[in-house]
Length: 133
Image 1 (cartoon, rainbow, N blue to C red):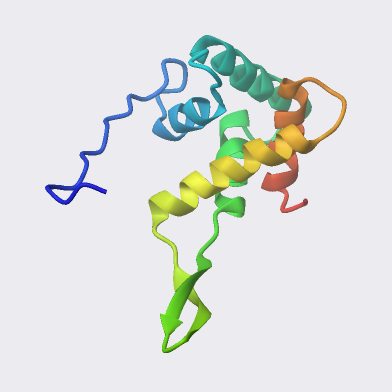
Image 2: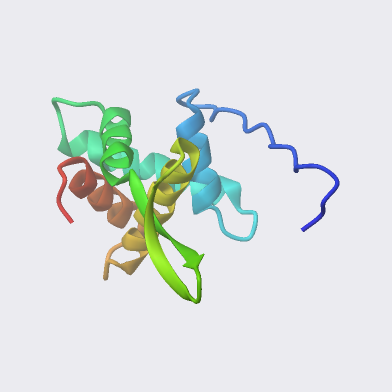
């Protein structure tokens, strides 16, 4: 790790459809091998599937509720005291908890069997927003 200075954070532009930064971060995490248009197609069609199913909340609200429900507030980190290592609970920064939630949603959607990624993501968003799974 270089000691000169901290790395600068890259500016992430909001997505073109919803003008939302969180959506843009999710799409970037969903992307594989630089295929952003495919990741956008998967994400937007998953939101379309949600909007067909749900009528009382918008699909973007369901997505944001899913992220909020999955975000961790505490995680354990290893701390060495004397000769032994302890797992110490520590509060998680907002940006880290957001990125963990995004990563977990994508991993668990991938782990679902059968269906296309669009349908798996839509199911994962619905379950996470209702605090199931």
